[in-house]
Image (cartoon, rainbow, N blue to C red; front, side, top):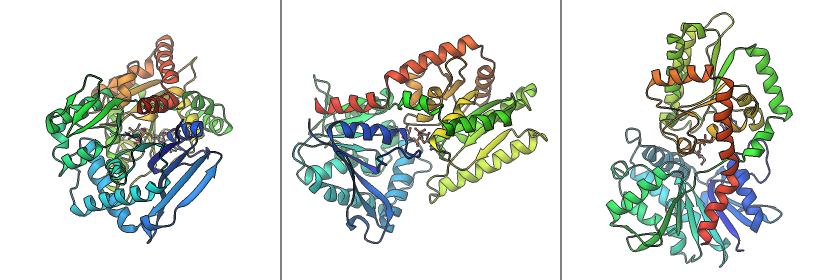
Length: 455
Ligand code: GDG
């Protein structure tokens, strides 16, 4: 089989350091199968930028190759167009999206440079798999440089309705460039529908008898591949010493009280303020729960250089402070808001000791936390997942308690129902969710995408 080349902004690590996301683990697995190369950003910002020397690291048949970006690239491409224009646009947030010609030019410049640096590393028969919104036009640039083998693209975040996307300046050029890919993978059926609607409405596209789409003189396959986690591997984390340590610490601290857990990078798409308000509503409506249930919110900061992120962090600190000020008691803190991360195995222990996993995304490509929470539960006595209907994960997790995070009263009622749910119902819901996570895991996802790309 031909060699696989993966391109993504963040690369690796090749071995599980305890920090690596499940996605990295799954991608390294598929790279090992046929041997391959993973290309992307080194994580370094240097003056030489995309002209820097290629950094290479090899383990067995898998190689990493990375380059730096310059300070201007970082500001315009990464913190600029990727995270201040595309991220909000694709999360339906026209109100926070910034449209700057400088960002846009930087985005295209970095895509061109990445394509030029990758080109000499690509063999005739290689298959290329490009990831995420940082690299929408990368395939088109690679084609211009003569790459003729299969190139696939997977978008980890949502694809919005045309009415929203069409507000993006030069949206047609961006989507036209995407049609250089042979396969475009999206997280959900809803995202896929939005994408092909766009092709029909804006590009005069139509579906061919073999299911591919023709638009603007290109032919492309567009399908949904909902991303999974390494379910059984994750389940195994709960038995590790790192997880056990957190479980013991929580047992000592909680002393029989129930805990609701939320885990997300600080990001306005995750609906964390809505979560705090729903929890406040629960305490308001159910006075008997005061002193008996708490919310633990773990939120490693991200993209702090972007104003909207610094702002949401301040809002959360304020909200947590005001709920705690109002309801806390000598021996009970309603919301424990932690702006730091935990190692993955420790996190698994925290999920395992939480009665409820609460995900209130206002818009989310998939949401892996929802899946990890389910994977970490003890099948004999599992907790309950309360999940926003606006997370891609909701499409295939109907046995979770699905909520509208904008309705604080509805979310509060679901929390109460989750806290009181009888054991047999918890087991039935968890059993169905877990079985699906085992089937549609990260390996299944990667292989489904690559099989389609090969076809
Ligand atoms: C994007 C899309 C899509 C979180 N806190 C800590 C920590 N995490 C880990 C979680 C989980 C990952 O980060 C977050 O993944 P999500 O899927 O929830 O969200 P995004 O980061 O926004 O990811 C999303 C995903 O891509 C994959 O396609 O599902 O919709 O937005 O794995 O566990 N990990 C550690 N410490 C923490 O404190 N170690």
